[in-house]
Image (cartoon, rainbow, N blue to C red; front, side, top):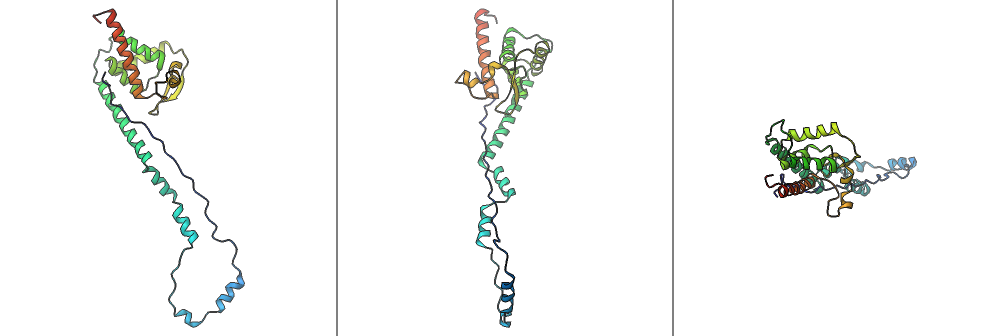
Length: 227
């Protein structure tokens, strides 16, 4: 089976670093008598000698080199390999979702046409076992798989929620960052089925729907060759 939408890459994470406290440049106050005596020991020849260039202390130089400014640290984080990979992943995810939505919008069907047995089985499975509130990207995937317009898929879920909102749900984040209210059967999928990923994603939802859709079609055709 060909996937309705292109696959996406995993998302990375980033690190941070801490900054030490600044060194103490003055350990004790200057003695006033030392200042006076040093001023008295000058000679006229001292004015003829060229001035010596000022030099920062080694402590100051070390402090400036080892502790970057907050703006520089922030800039380095933005251009770190992890941050660039995260940006690339988000760009690919948005492009993939847009492609799925555009493809789903091209599906034409009569607004008042009822769902057939094949479509109803798939929609009911998602509603009862995964979520009553699929995000936009998941409704687009459903529309493509069952060949029904995106508007009709959204309307079906909206009507079902009005008729029956019973059942426990748990809000979890998907890999793409969507907050979805999942059915209990769809929670902790890694523990229930070790072969599954630890977190729901567009790609994993697409795989589940496509496999179930194939099983439904096989079953219907076995019982009714005209289906």
